[in-house]
Image (cartoon, rainbow, N blue to C red; front, side, top):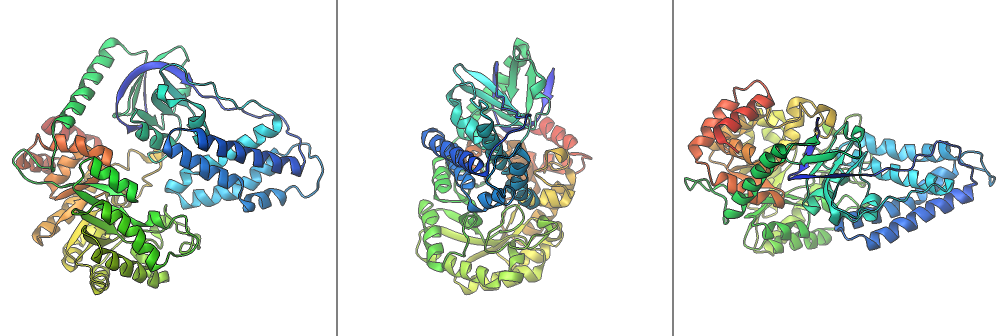
Length: 546
């Protein structure tokens, strides 16, 4: 039997199953308000202790954040509003669930990354109810190398398990930015999310997990493993054999850069051989702030990233708050459709001075560093918007000014939009969801949210052709750049640089080193005429190979 999901961390392994089961409380839980608050406090204490003992950095951070949520006065107040008398209620499950529901609904309405954080709230709620009921929430420790399967993998699960014994992670729920995906990439082990039937597999079965393809084979044959393992080993060996700047076999340079949100990401990029930062996501410095950081605070933040990239290019994206990245002091208004609302450049409609102060800070920081600082604006639709941004950025001494091409309007008008600036960068994550009118983080729409779709590739080709005609560089900083075959197609479409997660750089570098420009262009011309994402992939595989 073969099961499919979303591959979020590559690799091929075979192993026995270690199933994670969470306590299900299906009987009344009597408690007084004081006992409920005490249970919530105990959960917070447990999470704090776990955060101090878990070895994985990302799990430590999430557990610490969960502990803060459990101690949030607003949550305590919401529970207290539903349990007014200091008496023992016959069943407090509904009251606790209702108190959490308001917070859940708020995150779900935002969507994207924040919608996936609902799992953190659910875990705090379930642990609180389990604590009150006296149910054993202990998770059997992982003592032998095994493949971990679960409905989802929570931060507390990570703390309870010794993931040094985890061969792979396969979960029923989750998306590309879920905790499971983040943990797996941090550990460097294969992982698959959204594998809907994984919990139906018997515990005695042996599993083959292919994290690159998103495939699970139940009770595989020796040939199943041998063929996939040989292919995976060859891909990794090719990546390790090539070093230095990115280039094609004919010598055409294709700069390979790293996406970053902070100083640590920049340092990881340097370690991976990145030639610079192709996307510095400045909004990540704002997400947890209730008030706008001062110009001086921003200068200090930017300088730390710039200094880590001294002598290299850093392409900074101005604040892309909104949609799945709301900033408390900006995005206070609930929007019916945040992805189509006030975000990115559109924030100038409600908080024009915020962008002005950011540009001031970037200009000051750029003058104090040896990094080559370029600046671009997100969610630009028109030539008029591009021109206004360019004028404002240059007024602050910023020498290289660009725009993100991530809406159909910007792609179709790229000849006009890019003419107003010095460079462009394709945000393929958003461009894909806008071209296909499908939420890119909704696993139910995964067949529609692929950058391989010819409709998306045609939009990219239109924009890249315009940039070429204007002699302007155009890069890609979306997740598509980390797929080696798709990276080659993007180069064939006219893209001049690629930016990706640091962990993907070596594999893309090794793959491109085996192809010349003519082959990339030929393959790109054929995939543009495909009728589906799968057909485009098949064409690329036939011409480019693995």
